[in-house]
Image (cartoon, rainbow, N blue to C red; front, side, top):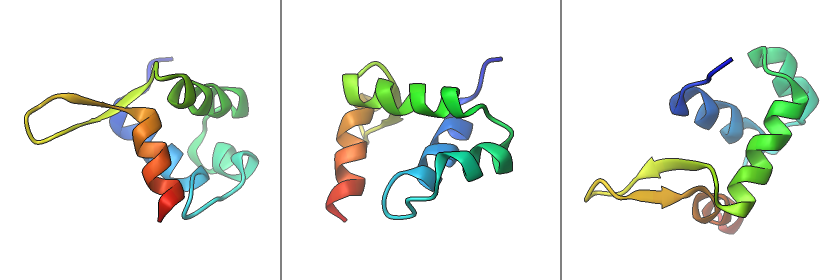
Amino acid sequence: MKYTTTFKKAVLRKVLPPENRSVHLVSKEMGVGEITIHRWISQIKDGTLNLEQDEEGNIKNGWVIFNIYLSV
């Protein structure tokens, strides 16, 4: 199944800081497999999942977004 970027962001916001909810609970709530959520987190870390664009329309690396969450 192909998930939209908006949907992925909604899921990842729940499991990443500051919410830090469990992958298991978010998986059940959002109807996404736990393995899929873990894969998205791994893709953020290795830079292969891009989630947002900056003001100029350039895609920001997901890992940068992940680090921003951690610094809040």
